[in-house]
Image (tube, rainbow, N blue to C red; front, side):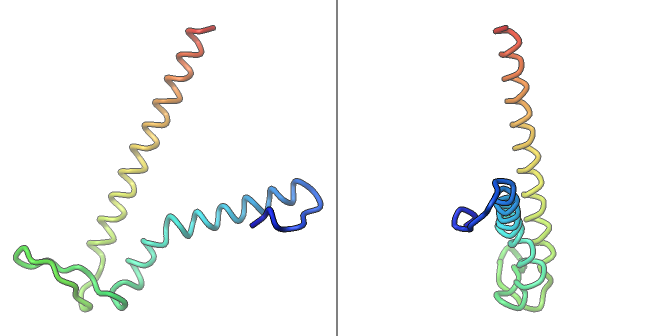
Length: 99
């Protein structure tokens, strides 16, 4: 989208691109949490488990679903960061041995 704008200088283009990328990433990554916390109960209903049977209920809170979503998000983010830091330290170690 920033490519189609008529920026006079490169810094203006970069600022516009960074702002658009940030807003897109924010909406794309966190909209499910907003939906589950504030809208899901009135739109589709929340999951309710009784005696091993899962049903949708509009009377319940979606808090258990939100907790599960947040838990999986933070665990996944933690392991992705751990994996990235491991690959970066391995790349640094290989550079040191090759020098």
